[in-house]
Image (cartoon, rainbow, N blue to C red; front, side):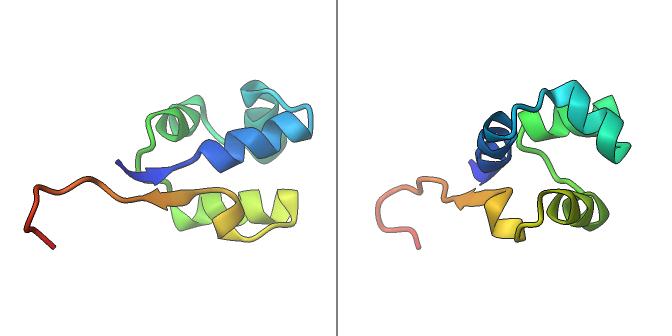
Amino acid sequence: MGISYKPLFVMMAQHGMKKTDLCEKLGISPTTLAKFAKNEHISGETIEKLCAFFRCQPGDIYKYVPEKYPKGRI
């Protein structure tokens, strides 16, 4: 799977925010927002905006989810 932005969505719910609120308050495009939902690459600049807004660390926004490898592969 790689990177998961599920922690961001949990944080947004805790703050009573919708995805559209995030776009409006941070100037994030709907395209970037769609990348979050698909767990795609997000720029460091966007991560920085989120950290400043929520006053958190990058690890509070996303997490690494290892992919499963076939037996015997490291």
